[in-house]
Length: 430
Image 1: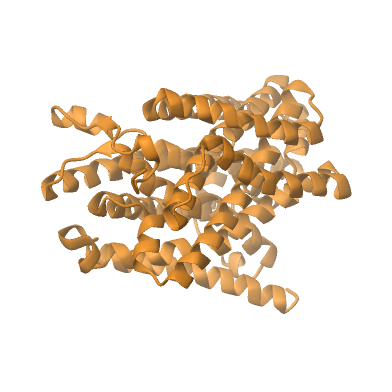
Image 2 (image 1 turned 30 degrees about the vertical axis):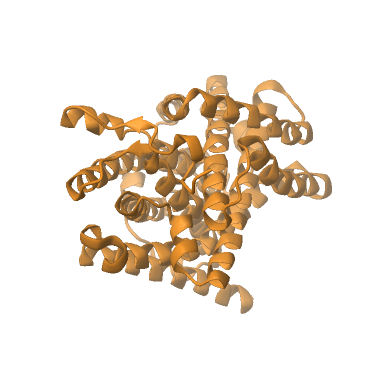
């Protein structure tokens, strides 16, 4: 099989007709990426941050989303300009030992992501259908057949499935916010940066979790592979147009994801923090408290439906990202079933172990920790991306403008600085 991204899906979506029709052909990959910005791990960090600090971390969610919009646009640009995804280019242009290290870090990030999905989907099954958490964790491995069926139908069907579940999630959160009636003054205060972020290590820890749950490293690989499913023409003009369309697609999708992420944090602030519940980090506890605090059983049902939808959606995108990373870095092609079972094996084990040793009440801490792992893995995807998209030798006329490269480099430095500060404070006993 030829060395292309996502096998049979490569250039399977036609880009033809009038400009409006060509633009419509590019709607899809951005929403696959947006799914990763509202997965169960994101829920856990947003709930923990909102219940403990109110809306103070809303600013972090907004800044993280703006970072994501910039970096995802670079990911699409890289792929459409070169015809190669980020993983393939790391293998092609970097020294082999460096590429192998980056591959191992990327796989670790995907396993951390899958861990969050395993726990989140299992909790959703428990809340809605009463399935015991331990059994639900094992049951999540069966979702591989869903991914397989969608891929056989075609890439556009897979994107449509993801889009439909995103609508379900949005409706569920809209209903909960209507019931919660948050104060707009508190939301406005949360949009301003707080100095406490640099003095309170607990706040910094959750902020890193929000960052890792928002700007997810596997999404950079996923986006670069997903846009290559579009059959873009060979000319510079064709590619330039495609980059513009793909950037609009991802920007709209990530703005939508920001609204959902902000809604989770605002909901936690309005329902839990405002009522003196400052330590809600477990999804089960949030589900148990939300109905009596809002005076509506419907709120709890909406919470469970949205959580399960997030888990199912994240399943699809993590499998695709895993395919792109493994095929790109080491040319190892596995069927979607084998790939899903491979990552699930490494995710289900820790989940079962934690539930067995520490009980269900420890799952929230495990979710937040998994997102912090993603934050530490993030620079190892961002730095190669920024360097490559700024390279004239690699990108030619389609390289990123210098101001975009400079801004992305500042983003990378900020992520690294926050990670180093947290490790320094932790080592010092902070």
